[in-house]
Length: 305
Image (cartoon, rainbow, N blue to C red; front, side, top):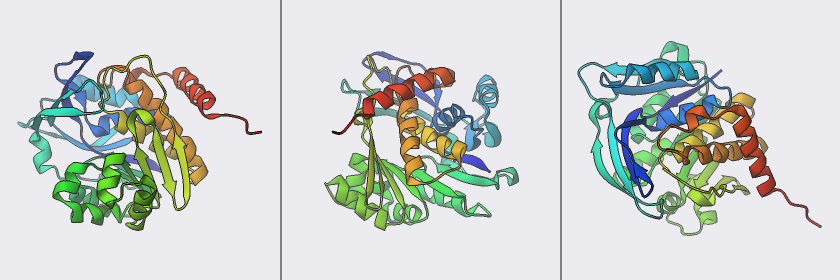
C-alpha cells in the first residue's frame, strides 16, 4: 500500500513583490512529495529530469523519504524550467519563460515496485499522460486524485473530461471550476463536475481556503491569515500532498476523514508560502505542524447555543 505521485520536478525562477530567486528546485511532484513526507508517508515518485538536475537535490529527496525508482534522468537533456512574476495581490502572475525540455517527450514508466499503489496523485500534466498512468496500473488504486488547470481546458477540453471521468477526486481552483462547468455558482459548478465522474471535488480559493464537495455534502476549510507571504508557488501542490498524505497515513477515505485531510492540506500549504520555493516545507517539524493544526482548530470551532 503506497502513495504514488506523478508530476513535474523542475527548476523555477520566481519574482514576487517581496524578492526574487535564481533557479531553484520546484515542480508539482516536488511539493506534493515533501508535503506528504510531513505526515509520515514515503511517496513513490514518477517524474523526469535532465542530467543538469543537482545530485544533491536527488540526495535530499531520498533523505526526506522519497522512493525515486520512477524518476527518469535523461542524459544530455535539460530539466523543465519555468519563470514567473507575481503581481502585488500575489494571486495573479505572468509567466516569463517556459522551457519544456525533457517534459516534451515524457513517457511515464510505472515500476513494478509501484504496483502496490493504493493512493495515486496525478499532478498537473497533460490529460493524456495522466490517463496513461491510470492505465499503467495493474490494479485500480483505492483512491485516484488529479490536479489540472485552465490551460488544458483551453486546448484539450474533451481529452481532459475523458481523464476526469476516471478519477475519484478532482482538485481545481474556483475560476477553473466555473470554466469547466459553465456555471458561475460554485454550488451548481460542483454538481455538474461531479456528474462528469469524480465522487469528490475540491475547489481551492487561495487565501480564502478550500471547499470539499461530495454529492450534497459540503465542507469548508479556511486559510490561515499570515503576517507575511513570500511566494505562493507550490501552495496548491503542497495542499494536495497534505490531503493525500493524510488519507494514506490513516487509510480512511470517508468524507469525515477527508474533512480532516483538507485541513492538514491547508495547514501545510500555509508553511510553503512563507518562504521561496521548497525552503520552508522541507524543514517543517511535527511540532510545528501540530501547532499550526491547533491554530486551525481554534479558527474553526465555535459553540452554537
